[in-house]
Image 1 (tube, one colour):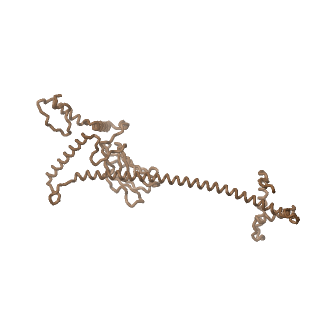
Image 2 (cartoon, rainbow, N blue to C red):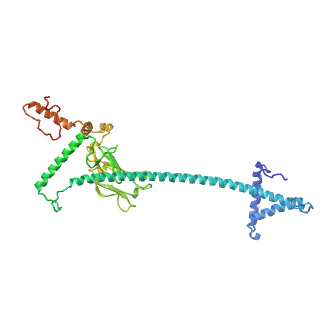
Length: 386
């Protein structure tokens, strides 16, 4: 068995041979480009030159006249073996390259699949949150409409027609209705200080709420509105305009505005101090500066779900930033909220109680046992001689 020809040429000599054969290849290429060669391939000329060298200067071909068949075929076998060796090297190199390329493509494909899965999970999560939010908004709006419908109940005659009252009767009925509602509200608050105002929802931890197309929060100074948009949305694709009392919002790619033109804001704002930005190409953040910075908003757009502003809890850390009058108002609101939560009288009720107690002490001859008070609160020990 013949020995392997692998690594027959030392590596350090390959560079020298490469330089030599590059020179030969260049000359063969020049010969091939000669019009008299009739388009003969440069490789064929290089082979002819090499084997011509072997014919002229060696006994490479003289062995073919030998009577020994193995000796006659040695030259051919040597050429084929060298050719096969280089072919194997080419295939080996090609296989390694293709394997690395395939592994790279597999890795990229795997990363792309994971990225798509993450994006799909994110889309599903956002869609689920959107569905849940819209369901909460729908329920809040339904409760709000039912509460409004109660106020619109009218008197009907025997034929089912609305009874028309004169102005005095209507005014009287309205006064009685308001008085009845106030009484019921006070009684309800006294029974359950945690109860919400009819037709409202509890404010979020940031003193805001939810609507069909946005979520919002607020401080006494500003209202922060966040409106989700499709991932990749650009600022030029957005329609976002507001005045002191109106607001509209939508995408140019959609047939209708998400928040219609001239939608009424809950209260007025300072347009010059208000602005919007696009964050991460997926959410519009709207900052509205309130005109009246001593009141809480019950919603952003009139007609959207309302929060119970009596359940709003201001951040204590922000009180130091307020002016004296505003701070006094906020501290009073916070005190009243704590009193109501504990089932105790508010600051206004305490003031009335104090005045009434002094008046009662100044007139011991008067009997107040059958008196009714608007807020339903009497001074402690009013009728036991204290």
